[in-house]
Length: 211
Image (cartoon, rainbow, N blue to C red; front, side, top):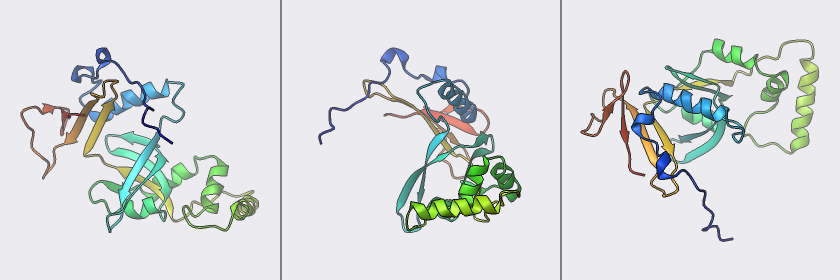
């Protein structure tokens, strides 16, 4: 099947994303502004869906979709089974990701719908199972077991917080001269500001990148 002609029209040059259009010089506040806009758009089904990419010790990349469950100046939070591939590899990214406390993981776990709590106990994420019937039977057994008592959070289930050093805001242009504004945090070892670098808030600076 030839797909070369498939292409989506983006915005015109009159709607370019200029530095003056930034809602804030703080990338977390800018992210909040864009998320709020996405939440108001009926065409966006799950505005908090995100692609999480990690790399194994031997250099094999892996990407999968997860849901963003909170964010702030301390970072971006999501929850998962820690024995899945994304959980095992994530903790090896030094200085970028850390586990949330058991208290915070417990609090979020028990705020989920009961069916989601049981599903998390029933499914050892990404492990091989014989068939769907096995999963449904396991789920039914747990529903009966925890009918009148709280569902315990699995030991290998919990949250992480991604502490960003780089945040890129991308907006497509029909001309393919896409807009890319990238924030980076100036920390020890970070590339120093160049002549085209602009100061953001706090430790942040931002730059425009060629598409």
